[in-house]
Image 1: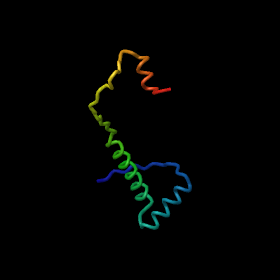
Image 2 (image 1 turned 90 degrees about the horizontal axis):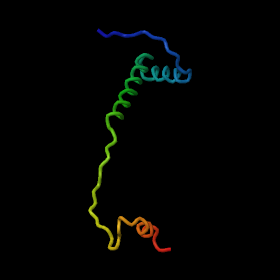
Image 3 (image 1 turned 60 degrees about the vertical axis):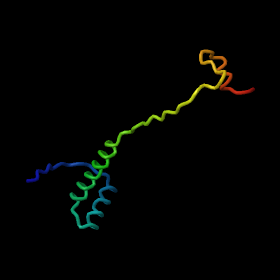
Image 4 (image 1 turned 45 degrees about the vertical axis):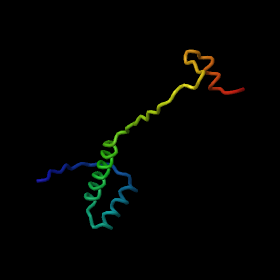
Length: 84
């Protein structure tokens, strides 16, 4: 047994016309078109939420250039700025 809830909502006139047109074209009831649209919306929304962003770290082995002193801020800035 399917339990349905009866409700009243305000829908934009243009959107309602499109929904009625789709119902007529597909042979569905207006109710079926609206329910199908809502199901598709919630399905897409849950799929988007199901794939969280994953950040992958890339580790690259390296070494300091000869003559670089990490404790000397002035010389580091000079090296980054390059020749003047």
